[in-house]
Image 1 (cartoon, rainbow, N blue to C red):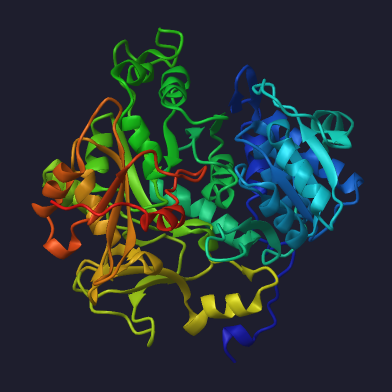
Image 2: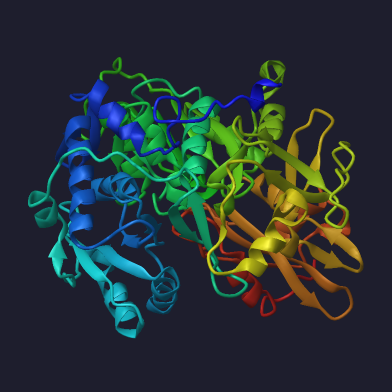
Length: 560
């Protein structure tokens, strides 16, 4: 008889469901007096933050919220958002964080699709939420958050005020009693090709990705984490739970500006933050005066305990789009070491990392940046990542040239799409999650994205990577941000069209950029049209290419 055939069963002594909500309980038990939250004048330790999260859980139970019920929140990066990541799922409810830039029409769809039982809304976003609820079929309980750091317009629209609810609630500890496969959170995709899909996370996946974040970053105890990444985006890549696991400090930043980021580094000694390439580009292109705030802080003197005149070394994590080698090289000069990760909503945020190799240290900064720009290898706790032929699911040769689809599988993958079995089945075809991203695999096993399948430009039968053209344009000193999409062409079908956002106070002509591209690209890949102006972006910093595709047909062709 094998060991597995003996009657050894799991019980309360040898098994507990994996859930990241327990990380805060441990932080409060072990480090009760350590600082947990900074927000304006607010300073709360882990004991207080845990107590408030439990008060939220008890308050929601008192309002009739139970296992599997959806609690929808529309909040900025504030302490209340941190508390929702624990107080909602600890009672078995499902946390649904919404993009704060969404319009009323999109919100109505999501309220109905999620079957929201409670909506917690910051006063800043109450107008859109009020309009959306008027048109929704669901009638959730509405709770207002009146953030002390917000002094703009916006009425209270709820039946309850968040702070009053907590003040009248019990703070006794709550232990998660569900199954680790239970739904924990619901996140909506951007919906650029139809109605947004509801991505369902489970407790096990969130727990493992939160721990994997620690392993990928060698995250020490008590990091000072700056919230530049919206917590509504993939639950902040699971970092609300990661920071709790390390008993770190959540430095809340309601609005991301260069002054806010560099000031927080100087004021609070920020050690880690995450953001899209556009956020890092914003930092690189800030004025020298603003960059100096990382040393002096906003008060003009060093308040973070650093040596006078010293720049604190900070670790950043970048994802959301492939960063250019130029950006990676420039951010390094600011004393910021970037870790490049790749992922999607369906995999809890990041699922691969460009793990640095020791031999890269001997390379020039430019060559090192080229290596770091790759999407890399699987996360520690993700089972596998590969590049496959999308028709056969067979791995493509690891030659750095053969293009296939990037696929992943393992515990850090969604349960599936809410009320969309067809899309779920398609996404998981062949036992892989199909990302829809096209990439190659190099001999060292590292993956590099070439393009989204929908972003490949097919010109005269030739496939052109928009990312390749963007990388070249980013090398021009005048370019701050760029996006390349297909422009309809009567002869070639499509040609590349570049939308370019220039650095402040800098001028360059389309002809000059075309000349620059011709020096680095074959002729058929050179943009045939260029438009200058601010690029449309999501609140997470992603450039909205689908908006630019709508405009590309009206951009005049260049004759140079």
